[in-house]
Image (cartoon, rainbow, N blue to C red; front, side, top):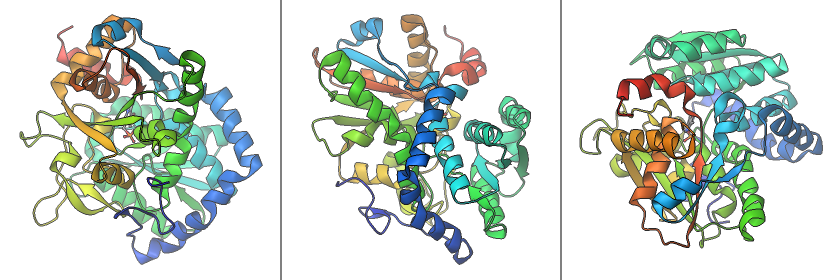
Length: 393
Ligand SMILES: *Cc1c(COP(=O)(O)O)cnc(C)c1O
């Protein structure tokens, strides 16, 4: 188990819990209880029931015939885009709302950038009748109006973060402040494999249902549980962690992590963290992040809001350092082309995040008998305006 978290909350040299002292009781309570709760049969039963009947799992593992012909090997798409709310994020928010209830928490807070995690959180809070407060940067609120209205329709309160650059990192700070002030009754739902231990491990476990399904689905279709490659995009890294999870210790399966190159890694407008980043502390954990020489976080850029994050989760920093996963960066242009291409080839319009993973297929050296699984993390409905602006279809 070389790639899972150790007893101290580290992945190699990355991870840990670098938090203000005031947050220690909350994080410690979670650390002491998360594994035991997740193993309870009543938890498992309800989690699996909701994944099946509410989220719509298992998601299909689809052999994309026309895409396979074009790329020149066998390509399967793991259809996380077919989940309720349109992406993989709900796997995690379902898990965390059940965990919060077991911990006796009455209120949920979350931060959101583009609003996707906010919507997934507001959804499960409505499902369980729990009060939900989502912090969002004031600028993001203006940029992501439909998701703001979705959260409100679902009964959540959206609070603007007015400090700093008024984007995701400021929303995170506000959420942390709220948690410090309301430690007893509130659970903080983090949306990716980031944050202080135990969040990265907990979120990876909730998302691991993705690779659990790939294993048996591939066995049914190909008579083997292992593909040659698993390809996924990495923002914070939760869909990738879920798609890799049951293959991490099986070195025969090659892992490909796709980051957002933005307008190019040398353009100053990029989110390719492993290429541009250095070790540092971000959102409570030691990881790789984009920073100035004196340690200020650099504003990332990508055409896809979900990949527009200045770091990666500590698990991925470790996979990168140990060379267990191959990290590729894809530009806005390459991603948009791949997204438009999938629509025409397969009748599936992917999220622009997922389009980065698809674009990576053209950069890999693939053999005709290779079996490749691409995690299609989400659907493109939310990105329609970006596709329209881009044109070229
Ligand atoms: C949020 C999001 C991502 C990026 O988040 P990860 O934690 O890296 O998975 C990728 N794809 C979609 C569709 C998303 O909504």
